[in-house]
Amino acid sequence: MAGLFDRQADVYVDARPTYPSEWYSMLAAVTPRRTLAWDVGTGNGQAALGVAEHYEQVIGTDVSEAQLKRAMPHPRVRYVHTPPSISDEEIISVVGGENSVDLVTVAQAVHWFDLPNFYSLVARLLRKPGGVLAIWGYNDCTVNPEFDLVFKRFHDTTLDFWDPRIQHIFDGYSTLSFPFESVGLGSEGKPLMLDMPIETSFDGFIGMVRSWSMVATTKERGVDLLSEEVVKELEIAWGGSELIQTVIYKAFMLAGKVKMVRYLHTPLSISDDELISSLGEENSVDLITVAQAVHWFDLPNFYSLVTRLLKKPGGIVAVWGYNEFAVSPIFDPVLKRFRDTTMQFWDPHIGYVFDDYSTLPSPFESIGLGTEGKPLMLDMQKETSFEGFLGLLRSWSAVTTAKERGIDLLSQGVVKELESSWGGPKLIRTVIYKSFMLAGKVRL
Image (tube, rainbow, N blue to C red; front, side):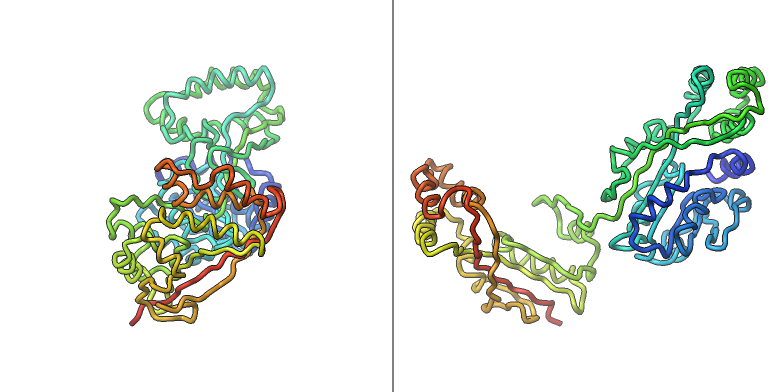
């Protein structure tokens, strides 16, 4: 890939359109800090120079030494050759270290990348929270009705010769994977569509067409798509070689930040080693939390996993839950009578919840937030209507189990009694959940 762009280096410098300054202002507005930026596939530095107007330092990298030799200098831009043989760790070191980059940009190039590996690098390098990755490109262009028809006929002759990866460009990056959280400037499947107007002569425009990778590769195979006749027809439709026209490139952008929460499906068949690998590695996790769920787990196996995963020293596991509620002196006795009707339908594991986790094994060293046999008792408040609270009751496993056995614990009569004691379906009340917590670190 580097060889292809090496051969096109001179053409790229003279022909490729520049990107509007407004784009860089737009990106700077969504990054809280503007200390360091990384422009990947920088080529001759067109995007790097635009980024440098807003960031203190820009590192521009490319696999092509020939491109970098023609890169435009700027006091805040440093160009670095990154050959295909360079390791991820070397790139991270060159750019500035993990969690250090405020903005990563890729202009008209990301479709050539090994995307999973690149996105992994970006996730490590971007500052968290706040760092943003922005990628963009362009495909169609319009000049005037007469020229556009002629140019389309030419473009159709090129389609069989493009590298398959260019399909992402033809699709306007709408099919490109982009696993980042949206910042309002295009997201996976929904790129931000932009117009990029450029004033140029026909000579300038045809230079851009000659810079296409496909034009170079087909010429090497003996196929001259831009023959003298084709160029002449395009020139006539343009209005002459010296005439300045406005070319509107149809551009598209995706921008996002690292998702701070990643959801993973962990089926019962997953092995301990597979689970550890999916989360990071042993001795890597600072905090493990389990909310209203640990009583369902195979505790010896779970605690073994926690011990392997938690960072030592310092990593913490915290488990918590809730059981009783307090709403009002009128409602609480009615709720208790209903709850008593559910007791025979609860799974035995729920006994830990009824006991406030006071009987739950927890072989970890106390950090002062509840320990084995002595949970930390807490109040958890929530404002809700009766309809919202009733939804919680309907979600109880005991209620669904009873219903499967033909017993409707929340019959119309029961619901009516609860609603009346609450004060009406729409009335907002404060519900105090009686909560409990155990937290600790691995005993060394």
